[in-house]
Length: 174
Image 1 (cartoon, one colour):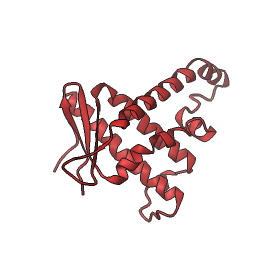
Image 2: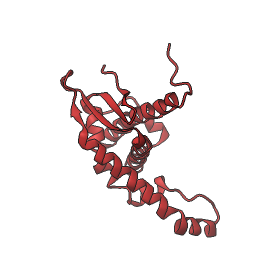
Image 3: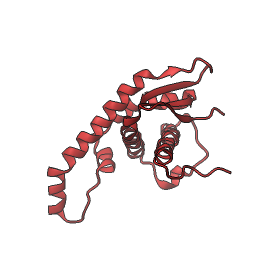
Image 4: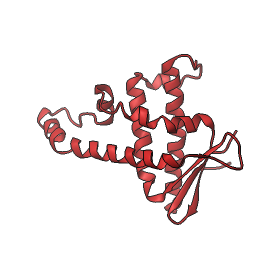
C-alpha cells in the first residue's frame, strides 16, 4: 500500500504525496462532482435549513446562503487550480503528487467535504450504506461510496496536518 502523506515542502507550500491512481482519479473528478453543487438534493445537504422557524430560514436564505455559496465556489476554484499541478511522482511509477500553497488547506478541506456531501446526496447514501464492505464497481452507488471514502481519507490527512501544525496532537500511533 502506498502511504498517503501531506508533507511540508517549504514554509509556504505543502505536498500531498503517495496518491495512488484511485485517489488521484477522485481528485481529478472533483470538478465533475462539484458541478452538481446546485442540484436540489446537493444544495439541501450543503446548506440545510438552520431552523424550524420559516421567517428565520427566509432571512438565512437572503443574507447568509449567498455568502456560503460564494465561499463554496471560491474554495472549489482554488482547489481546481491547485490540481493542475497534479503530477506523477518521478521516483514511483503510478504514484502521483500535488503541491499547493499551505494557505489553501482550508479551501481543500471545504472542496473535498463539499464533494463528499454532493456524492452522498446525489446517490442517496445513508449512514448504513457508508458501513458496507460488499462494494461492486459496476454499481454507480458503490463507486460513489468508494469516492466518498477515498476523499474522506484525504480530508482526514488535511485535518490531522492542521492539528499537528498547530502544535496539537496529531493522529495516535501504535
